[in-house]
Amino acid sequence: MTALMEQGEICRPIGFVPTMGYLHQGHLSLVHRARQECRTVVVSIFVNPTQFGVNEDFDSYPRDLSRDLEMLEPMGVDIVFCPPVREMYPDGYQTFVDVEQLAQILCGARRPGHFRGVTTVVLKLVNIVKADLMYMGEKDFQQCVVLETMLRELNQACRIIRCPIVREADGLAMSSRNVYLSPEDRQKASCLHQAIQLAQRLCRDGKDKADEVIPVLTELILSRGGQIDYIAIVDHVSLQPVDVVDTRSRLLLAVRFGKTRLIDNGAIA
Amino acid sequence: MTALMEQGEICRPIGFVPTMGYLHQGHLSLVHRARQECRTVVVSIFVNPTQFGVNEDFDSYPRDLSRDLEMLEPMGVDIVFCPPVREMYPDGYQTFVDVEQLAQILCGARRPGHFRGVTTVVLKLVNIVKADLMYMGEKDFQQCVVLETMLRELNQACRIIRCPIVREADGLAMSSRNVYLSPEDRQKASCLHQAIQLAQRLCRDGKDKADEVIPVLTELILSRGGQIDYIAIVDHVSLQPVDVVDTRSRLLLAVRFGKTRLIDNGAIA
Image (cartoon, rainbow over all chains, first blue to last red; front, top):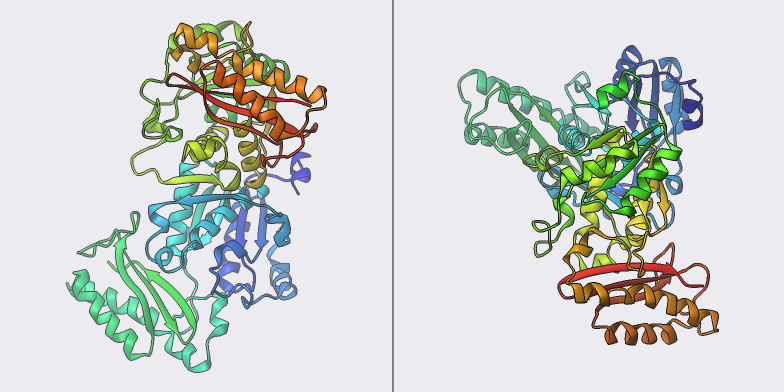
C-alpha cells in the first residue's frame, strides 16, 4: 500500500476508519462520511491484542472477516487493511505510547493498559496508512479525547473527525460487543440511553447538580439490573468531574449486563 | 514551516539533524552529510528538558544560540528550528513514547527517564519537520539503537542515517559536555579512546573474551582517574552483553571525570 502511495497513485486526503471488525451501522456511518470527504478511504480491521487486559475478551471478541468485507463491498472503500498480529507486533516488539492523566481515569482506571494499547496501535496504523483524517465514533468518547491528545501532542498531522453515535431502534448504542448480550440483557441494556435522556430532562427542569442527577440515573440503571462500573458527569475536554452541568459537560456511563460491559455517553445540557 | 511545505516550496528528501545546540564539529559533520544527500536540510536546536533527570545538568547545559547560528551560516542549512520549551510541551503535556527493554539498560539504567524524553522529543521533532532522513552521530550509540527501534516499531517513515564519531586530536569524542572538563580532566579523558584502541589490540591478539578484555580496560581507566559508570561489550543490535567479541560486538563506555559523565564506544573486532 505504501509503495502504491509513493508512486502517487493514491490521492489525498486519505480518510481512515480504524476498526476491530465485526462491523455494524456505526462503522458504516464512519466509512460513508470518509467516502464523502476524502479522495482515498482506508478501513483497517484488526483486533488489537495490546488493548485487551489479561482477563478480557480478546480471544472471544467477535470476528467475521468475510461478512465484514461483504458489508464494505458497496461502500466504495479503496483499501481494507487487515494485518496479521505478528506483522503489527513482531517478536520483541517494545515501543508504546502513553497519554498519562487522561488514560488513567474512567475506563482507563477499570481497564489498566487499555489506552496504552489503543494509542500505540492507532499511531502505528495512522503511520502505515498515512492518514490525513481519521473517523471515529463518539461512543468511545474517552478514546476520542485520548487519541486527539496523542496526535496533537506528538505533532502528528492526522486529525480526528468525530462522528455521532449510531443507535438501535430502542436507543442502545451500536457495538460489536452487543452480540454477547442474552435476549433479556439486550432488552435491559436500553436503559443506558434512557438514562442519558433522563439526565437531559432533569437538566432541562433545572436539576443541574451532578450530585442530584447521578443518584437518579443510578437508581434507574440498578432497577433495570445493570451493574454500574461508573456514572460520571465530566468536562468534555479535561474529563474531570463537574459539579454543575453545562454545555461543556458530558455524561459518561459504563455498565455491565451479565458479563458484558457496555459504555455510552451524551451531552446533557 | 509546515505551511511552506504544504505549499510545495520545500523539496524532499528532507534531511534532519536534531541537536541540543552548543555545536561542535561532530554536529557539523552531520549537517554536511545531510546537505550532500537531501534537497532540504533542517537543523533543530532544542535543549530538551524531558530527557534530563532531576539532578542532571539541564540548567547548566551549555547554550550559545548566536554562536550556533554563526557556525551553521556557511553550511547551507534551509531551516534552523529553535522552539521554545512551552511550544514543545504546553501546560498539561502528557504524551510520552517508551521503548521498553532497550531503554532500561546501560545509560537507561543510570539515567531513569532519559530515553523516554529522547524518544518523545525526537518523534515530535520528526513529525514537525516531516523528516525523511535523520542524521545522528554514533557517539550516542544506544540512542541510535533506541530511536531506530522506535521509528521502525511505530511505522514512522523516517530513517536514521548513522554517522561516525568525530574526535579531537587526542581521540576524545566531541561532545558539548566536554566544556565542563577541567584542564586536568580534559587530558585524562583521552583514556576513553585509548581504552577502545587497547580493546581492539587485545582482540587482534586473540584475547577476545569479554571477561579478559573488560578488566584490562577497567585498570587503564581507573589508573587515569576515571570513575567507571559502566564498561560493556554488547551485541550491536540487542545491546545484550556478549561473552566472546566478534564483528557484531560493540564496546560501550560511560565514565565520569570529576562531575562530568562522558560516553564513548567503538567496534573492536
